Image (cartoon, rainbow, N blue to C red; front, side):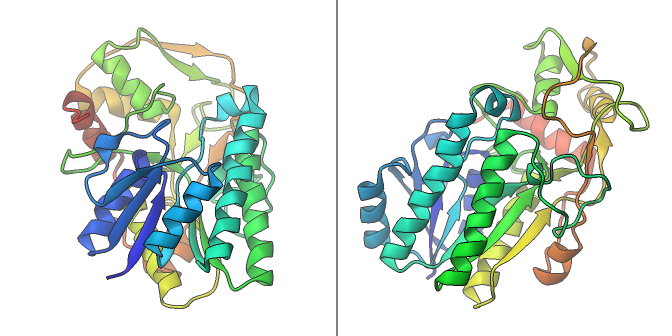
Length: 325
């Protein structure tokens, strides 16, 4: 049985990936400090509480478990927070990843799946954007991930070390079975906030900027269902375990929806109306980010199942109405 250490596995994407790993009979160990994750979200495997800054503890866990590969989800992801607290993002997302890789090399573990982001592209002049597009992040969150990507590239050239970096576009939705879903200390994602507005938990839903150079003036994003993204991680993992070289893949569906289109779809799915307030642009937001996903489809043979905005929102709405934790 193949062993996988899932760092940050108690979080939103990590917990869905663990469910996918369990379906393929992997032996799973989760390492998480539970700062943003939830113990109840780990449906399979076992949990060790710990932080990537705790190098001795991390090394002890890796030496004892001896994973075949590590999947690294343990990063902060809020763009606005990163602008206010850049050092927090460079410390957690970049420095702590250095800690992880150094310990991996010390322990002879040489396969890593890294959670990256479309934010590394910044504000691309054309979309859909492919993996060869120059990295030009416009906020500390994206920069913290771009630093890691460059570091991984250099390390893989100098050591017996292979990685896959998955650049997420906008992740949304919840487990279609309703067992797990998104629960953050503070809801910042558009779909989640719109659903909370539909429930009456948020008085006003804000649109940050209506004067972008897009058809309706609002930002456009490529929304990928979290369960499809989880499967992309398994495909990437098996790609590395088969002995393939390091690579980078965009994770999205290849088409986008505007903020206004998402809001209208939320209202349609929920049958609820709610107040929407148009306000100024938010620092660090690109007008449009859509993935060119051909490399993912062709190389990993990824087969998405949930490329439907209404379905994505329905699974999120079901979770909002019936959360298990």
